[in-house]
Image (tube, rainbow, N blue to C red; front, side):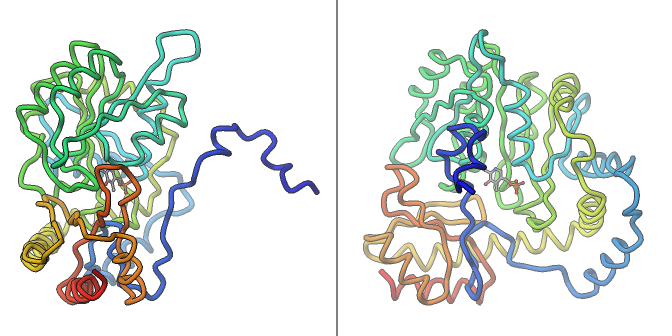
Amino acid sequence: MNPDFVAYNIRQDVQDMHAYAVQDAAGMVKLDAMENPHRLPAELQAALGERLGAVALNRYPDGRVDDLRRALAAHAGMPEGFDIMLGNGSDELISLLALACAKPAGGQAASVLAPVPGFVMYAMSAQLQGLDFHGVPLTADFELDETAMLAAIAQHRPTLTYLAYPNNPTANLWDAAVIEKIIVAVGEQGGLVVMDEAYQPFASQSYIDRLARHSHVLLMRTLSKFGLAGVRLGYMMGPKALIAEVDKVRPPYNISVLNCECALFALGYQDVFAAQAQDIRTQRTVILAALTPLPGVKAYPSDANMILVRVPDAAKTFEGMRLRKVLVKNVSKMHPLLANCLRLTVGTATENEAMLAALLESL
Ligand SMILES: *Cc1c(COP(=O)(O)O)cnc(C)c1O
């Protein structure tokens, strides 16, 4: 059979694109994907097993999903009059937003705007739904370029504007006053703003208290960085009527009964996860203190469970660390502003010691 046969009917732009890359981490200290390094304590693992064993796997997901929606809304402190929808990870919500906003050919083209470097799914979801993507470069120190952002909003009138708060991979929170100006400008053009708070458990600020000020702002979060990356559970809050529209394009039963029950279980032990997040924030301080005095190394401030660091030769350091069995992310080719940058996920004290030793030996 012609090996190209299966590709015949696949869209050319899909054939030309790269799949989301997941690095092989077998046998490595895995510090490449902002996972929480802590597992559930043994007694909770046993209790969860029992609870999952009792779930009716023969039935489609039912009203239990609404219990989870309520529990997450309470966890986040969702304002009155708002609603919440769930996704199979926030990646699914990002795809659903593009799907809900994509306009059929002929009309005014829909578009997505986001600062770059940023989370790759914003551009990927746009491309896959045929929306234009406009990336607006951050400043050299990774702040929002207010002038460039406002000019791009006026020029492109974006349907969706993403602001990751804090941003990935730069790990910083942007200026609240500049964010407010961007939100107002997008609103005046009739667009939506999505505040993506994937790293909220480690951040000193959240947009949640300001959410009720605007009717065109959505707030997205996930349980992935909280400590349940394997469960796949993202959520998005916004004005009721707006959430109702986006929810129409959600596939039925998108949250498995196992994801749902696991998330409900975890929310019953929020103190355990809060203690893990506190440990990660403490470890972040330890890593930053070790990196800051190193000559030729620049570590950037972080409000997330990752640290962006610029080294003299990122390819050499990444490879040296890999040979020493420490896997981080080489983001130096993602964007010119990230030249020679590595992204380090904060791990346990032991993992971080191994990571710092490997980095020092690989500079
Ligand atoms: C990790 C991440 C997400 C996606 O997380 P899910 O695992 O799909 O919930 C969303 N936004 C940003 C900025 C991220 O870094």
